[in-house]
Length: 286
Image (cartoon, rainbow, N blue to C red; front, side, top):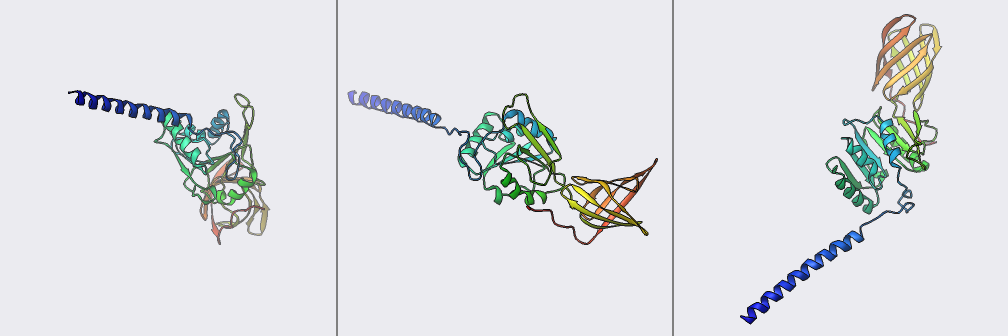
Protein backbone atom coordinates (compact mmCIF):
# COMPACT_ATOMS: atom_id res chain seq x y z
CA UNK A 1 0.00 0.00 0.00
CA UNK A 2 2.89 2.33 0.87
CA UNK A 3 4.50 1.50 -2.48
CA UNK A 4 1.27 2.37 -4.31
CA UNK A 5 1.07 5.70 -2.47
CA UNK A 6 4.72 6.41 -3.31
CA UNK A 7 4.14 5.75 -7.01
CA UNK A 8 1.04 7.93 -7.04
CA UNK A 9 2.88 10.78 -5.35
CA UNK A 10 5.78 10.38 -7.75
CA UNK A 11 3.47 10.52 -10.77
CA UNK A 12 1.72 13.58 -9.35
CA UNK A 13 5.07 15.31 -8.84
CA UNK A 14 6.10 14.40 -12.37
CA UNK A 15 2.89 15.86 -13.81
CA UNK A 16 3.39 19.06 -11.83
CA UNK A 17 6.94 19.33 -13.17
CA UNK A 18 5.69 18.91 -16.73
CA UNK A 19 3.00 21.57 -16.24
CA UNK A 20 5.43 24.01 -14.65
CA UNK A 21 7.97 23.40 -17.42
CA UNK A 22 5.28 24.06 -20.05
CA UNK A 23 4.22 27.28 -18.38
CA UNK A 24 7.84 28.38 -18.09
CA UNK A 25 8.44 27.61 -21.76
CA UNK A 26 5.40 29.65 -22.77
CA UNK A 27 6.47 32.60 -20.61
CA UNK A 28 10.00 32.40 -21.99
CA UNK A 29 8.69 32.24 -25.59
CA UNK A 30 6.49 35.27 -24.96
CA UNK A 31 9.43 37.14 -23.49
CA UNK A 32 11.58 36.23 -26.49
CA UNK A 33 8.92 37.04 -29.13
CA UNK A 34 10.51 38.96 -31.94
CA UNK A 35 10.23 42.73 -31.72
CA UNK A 36 11.55 44.77 -34.67
CA UNK A 37 13.62 47.89 -34.07
CA UNK A 38 13.12 51.05 -36.10
CA UNK A 39 16.16 51.50 -38.33
CA UNK A 40 17.18 47.84 -38.31
CA UNK A 41 19.00 46.65 -41.41
CA UNK A 42 17.14 44.76 -44.12
CA UNK A 43 18.15 43.26 -47.44
CA UNK A 44 17.59 46.45 -49.47
CA UNK A 45 16.38 49.04 -46.96
CA UNK A 46 16.30 49.73 -43.23
CA UNK A 47 12.94 49.20 -41.54
CA UNK A 48 10.93 52.31 -40.72
CA UNK A 49 7.19 51.75 -40.25
CA UNK A 50 4.71 53.81 -42.24
CA UNK A 51 2.57 55.89 -39.84
CA UNK A 52 -0.93 54.48 -39.58
CA UNK A 53 -2.46 57.78 -40.69
CA UNK A 54 -0.48 57.58 -43.92
CA UNK A 55 -1.35 53.91 -44.42
CA UNK A 56 -5.01 54.93 -44.38
CA UNK A 57 -4.34 57.82 -46.76
CA UNK A 58 -2.43 55.63 -49.21
CA UNK A 59 -5.31 53.16 -49.41
CA UNK A 60 -7.79 56.02 -49.77
CA UNK A 61 -5.77 57.54 -52.62
CA UNK A 62 -5.78 54.20 -54.42
CA UNK A 63 -9.58 54.04 -53.93
CA UNK A 64 -9.36 50.43 -52.79
CA UNK A 65 -12.50 48.31 -52.67
CA UNK A 66 -13.16 44.66 -51.76
CA UNK A 67 -12.75 43.88 -55.48
CA UNK A 68 -9.06 44.83 -55.32
CA UNK A 69 -6.01 42.72 -54.63
CA UNK A 70 -3.38 44.72 -52.72
CA UNK A 71 0.28 43.70 -52.65
CA UNK A 72 2.61 45.51 -50.25
CA UNK A 73 6.27 45.42 -51.32
CA UNK A 74 8.47 45.18 -48.25
CA UNK A 75 5.58 44.65 -45.85
CA UNK A 76 7.52 44.93 -42.57
CA UNK A 77 5.26 44.34 -39.58
CA UNK A 78 2.26 43.88 -41.88
CA UNK A 79 0.30 47.01 -40.97
CA UNK A 80 -0.61 48.02 -44.54
CA UNK A 81 -1.76 44.52 -45.47
CA UNK A 82 -3.71 44.18 -42.23
CA UNK A 83 -5.34 47.60 -42.68
CA UNK A 84 -6.46 46.61 -46.19
CA UNK A 85 -7.76 43.28 -44.90
CA UNK A 86 -9.78 45.05 -42.21
CA UNK A 87 -11.49 46.92 -45.07
CA UNK A 88 -12.51 43.58 -46.54
CA UNK A 89 -9.76 43.54 -49.17
CA UNK A 90 -7.58 40.55 -50.03
CA UNK A 91 -3.96 41.57 -49.49
CA UNK A 92 -0.48 40.05 -49.66
CA UNK A 93 2.73 41.23 -48.01
CA UNK A 94 6.10 40.41 -49.57
CA UNK A 95 8.91 40.61 -47.01
CA UNK A 96 12.47 39.26 -47.03
CA UNK A 97 12.95 39.06 -43.25
CA UNK A 98 11.42 35.76 -42.02
CA UNK A 99 11.01 37.11 -38.47
CA UNK A 100 8.97 40.00 -39.86
CA UNK A 101 6.84 37.58 -41.84
CA UNK A 102 6.01 35.55 -38.72
CA UNK A 103 5.37 38.73 -36.73
CA UNK A 104 2.97 39.91 -39.47
CA UNK A 105 1.11 36.60 -39.37
CA UNK A 106 0.70 36.89 -35.60
CA UNK A 107 -0.49 40.49 -35.94
CA UNK A 108 -3.03 39.46 -38.58
CA UNK A 109 -4.30 36.67 -36.34
CA UNK A 110 -4.70 39.09 -33.42
CA UNK A 111 -6.78 41.36 -35.67
CA UNK A 112 -8.87 38.44 -36.93
CA UNK A 113 -7.99 38.94 -40.61
CA UNK A 114 -5.79 35.93 -41.36
CA UNK A 115 -8.29 34.84 -44.01
CA UNK A 116 -7.59 37.97 -46.10
CA UNK A 117 -4.07 39.00 -45.02
CA UNK A 118 -1.27 36.71 -46.16
CA UNK A 119 2.49 37.10 -46.02
CA UNK A 120 5.38 35.46 -47.83
CA UNK A 121 9.12 35.52 -47.35
CA UNK A 122 10.49 36.51 -50.77
CA UNK A 123 12.84 38.80 -52.69
CA UNK A 124 11.01 41.73 -54.31
CA UNK A 125 13.06 41.43 -57.48
CA UNK A 126 12.20 37.77 -57.89
CA UNK A 127 8.51 38.05 -57.01
CA UNK A 128 5.51 38.01 -59.32
CA UNK A 129 3.06 40.76 -58.42
CA UNK A 130 1.32 40.90 -61.80
CA UNK A 131 -2.05 39.98 -60.26
CA UNK A 132 -2.15 43.06 -58.05
CA UNK A 133 -4.62 45.84 -58.77
CA UNK A 134 -2.99 48.02 -56.11
CA UNK A 135 0.67 48.07 -55.02
CA UNK A 136 1.85 49.86 -51.89
CA UNK A 137 5.46 50.42 -50.87
CA UNK A 138 7.90 52.35 -48.70
CA UNK A 139 11.22 51.77 -50.44
CA UNK A 140 14.21 53.88 -51.39
CA UNK A 141 14.24 55.85 -54.68
CA UNK A 142 16.85 53.57 -56.25
CA UNK A 143 14.73 50.51 -55.40
CA UNK A 144 11.67 52.19 -56.92
CA UNK A 145 13.66 52.80 -60.11
CA UNK A 146 14.82 49.19 -60.29
CA UNK A 147 11.22 48.04 -59.94
CA UNK A 148 9.82 50.65 -62.34
CA UNK A 149 10.15 48.66 -65.60
CA UNK A 150 8.32 45.73 -64.00
CA UNK A 151 5.64 48.04 -62.64
CA UNK A 152 5.12 49.70 -66.03
CA UNK A 153 4.43 46.26 -67.51
CA UNK A 154 1.51 45.72 -65.14
CA UNK A 155 -2.05 45.92 -66.39
CA UNK A 156 -3.04 49.50 -67.31
CA UNK A 157 -4.99 51.03 -64.46
CA UNK A 158 -3.01 49.32 -61.70
CA UNK A 159 -2.56 51.85 -58.90
CA UNK A 160 0.84 52.32 -57.25
CA UNK A 161 1.15 54.19 -53.95
CA UNK A 162 4.49 55.03 -52.36
CA UNK A 163 5.33 56.51 -48.99
CA UNK A 164 7.55 59.57 -49.61
CA UNK A 165 9.78 58.30 -52.42
CA UNK A 166 9.18 58.89 -56.12
CA UNK A 167 9.80 57.14 -59.46
CA UNK A 168 12.35 59.47 -61.02
CA UNK A 169 11.13 61.15 -64.20
CA UNK A 170 7.84 59.23 -64.05
CA UNK A 171 5.85 61.98 -62.37
CA UNK A 172 3.09 60.97 -60.01
CA UNK A 173 -0.58 61.43 -60.85
CA UNK A 174 -1.39 62.64 -57.36
CA UNK A 175 0.44 63.73 -54.19
CA UNK A 176 -1.02 64.09 -50.70
CA UNK A 177 0.46 64.99 -47.32
CA UNK A 178 -1.12 63.99 -44.01
CA UNK A 179 -0.80 66.40 -41.08
CA UNK A 180 -3.14 64.92 -38.48
CA UNK A 181 -1.68 61.93 -36.69
CA UNK A 182 1.57 61.98 -38.65
CA UNK A 183 4.86 63.71 -37.87
CA UNK A 184 7.41 61.91 -40.08
CA UNK A 185 7.16 60.25 -43.50
CA UNK A 186 3.76 61.80 -44.15
CA UNK A 187 3.61 62.21 -47.96
CA UNK A 188 2.06 59.71 -50.36
CA UNK A 189 2.51 59.52 -54.14
CA UNK A 190 0.07 57.83 -56.51
CA UNK A 191 0.76 56.56 -60.03
CA UNK A 192 -1.66 54.84 -62.37
CA UNK A 193 0.02 52.45 -64.78
CA UNK A 194 -0.62 53.84 -68.29
CA UNK A 195 -1.49 51.85 -71.38
CA UNK A 196 1.22 51.66 -74.03
CA UNK A 197 0.09 53.81 -76.95
CA UNK A 198 3.23 55.03 -78.68
CA UNK A 199 3.14 54.37 -82.41
CA UNK A 200 0.94 54.95 -85.44
CA UNK A 201 -2.83 54.47 -85.32
CA UNK A 202 -5.16 54.31 -88.30
CA UNK A 203 -8.45 56.19 -88.14
CA UNK A 204 -11.21 55.97 -90.76
CA UNK A 205 -10.53 59.60 -91.64
CA UNK A 206 -6.76 59.70 -91.21
CA UNK A 207 -3.74 58.79 -89.12
CA UNK A 208 -2.83 59.39 -85.48
CA UNK A 209 0.86 59.41 -84.52
CA UNK A 210 1.55 59.19 -80.80
CA UNK A 211 4.66 59.67 -78.72
CA UNK A 212 4.56 58.65 -75.09
CA UNK A 213 6.49 59.54 -71.97
CA UNK A 214 4.86 57.54 -69.21
CA UNK A 215 1.31 58.98 -68.86
CA UNK A 216 2.01 62.05 -71.02
CA UNK A 217 1.39 61.84 -74.77
CA UNK A 218 2.05 64.09 -77.76
CA UNK A 219 1.90 63.67 -81.52
CA UNK A 220 -0.09 64.62 -84.58
CA UNK A 221 -3.43 63.91 -86.20
CA UNK A 222 -3.35 63.77 -89.99
CA UNK A 223 -6.48 64.05 -92.06
CA UNK A 224 -6.07 64.42 -95.82
CA UNK A 225 -3.35 66.99 -96.42
CA UNK A 226 -3.76 68.62 -93.00
CA UNK A 227 -1.57 67.62 -90.05
CA UNK A 228 -2.48 69.00 -86.62
CA UNK A 229 -0.36 68.75 -83.45
CA UNK A 230 -2.02 67.28 -80.37
CA UNK A 231 -2.33 69.17 -77.10
CA UNK A 232 -3.26 68.22 -73.54
CA UNK A 233 -2.47 64.58 -74.26
CA UNK A 234 -2.67 62.30 -71.25
CA UNK A 235 -3.31 58.73 -70.15
CA UNK A 236 -4.93 57.62 -66.92
CA UNK A 237 -4.64 53.87 -67.02
CA UNK A 238 -6.39 52.77 -70.20
CA UNK A 239 -8.21 56.11 -70.57
CA UNK A 240 -6.76 58.44 -73.20
CA UNK A 241 -7.53 62.10 -73.84
CA UNK A 242 -6.14 64.81 -76.11
CA UNK A 243 -7.17 67.81 -78.17
CA UNK A 244 -6.68 68.48 -81.89
CA UNK A 245 -8.08 71.26 -84.09
CA UNK A 246 -10.37 72.43 -81.31
CA UNK A 247 -11.92 68.97 -80.83
CA UNK A 248 -11.68 67.02 -77.56
CA UNK A 249 -10.93 63.31 -77.91
CA UNK A 250 -11.46 60.80 -75.12
CA UNK A 251 -11.38 57.05 -75.36
CA UNK A 252 -10.39 53.69 -73.95
CA UNK A 253 -7.31 51.79 -75.08
CA UNK A 254 -7.71 48.04 -75.42
CA UNK A 255 -4.51 46.55 -76.74
CA UNK A 256 -4.23 47.71 -80.35
CA UNK A 257 -7.60 49.45 -80.49
CA UNK A 258 -9.06 52.70 -79.20
CA UNK A 259 -12.73 53.59 -79.08
CA UNK A 260 -14.19 56.77 -77.71
CA UNK A 261 -15.99 60.05 -78.10
CA UNK A 262 -14.98 63.27 -79.85
CA UNK A 263 -16.54 66.63 -78.95
CA UNK A 264 -16.34 69.51 -81.37
CA UNK A 265 -18.34 72.67 -80.81
CA UNK A 266 -21.76 71.59 -79.68
CA UNK A 267 -21.70 68.15 -81.31
CA UNK A 268 -20.53 64.75 -80.11
CA UNK A 269 -19.42 61.83 -82.20
CA UNK A 270 -17.65 58.50 -82.05
CA UNK A 271 -14.08 57.81 -83.05
CA UNK A 272 -11.95 54.70 -83.26
CA UNK A 273 -8.38 53.81 -84.16
CA UNK A 274 -6.33 50.69 -84.79
CA UNK A 275 -2.61 50.49 -84.18
CA UNK A 276 -0.37 49.67 -87.12
CA UNK A 277 2.72 47.80 -85.94
CA UNK A 278 3.74 46.68 -82.46
CA UNK A 279 3.45 48.86 -79.33
CA UNK A 280 6.66 50.51 -78.16
CA UNK A 281 8.26 49.17 -74.95
CA UNK A 282 7.70 51.02 -71.72
CA UNK A 283 10.37 53.53 -70.69
CA UNK A 284 13.04 52.01 -68.46
CA UNK A 285 15.44 53.60 -66.02
CA UNK A 286 17.44 56.37 -67.62
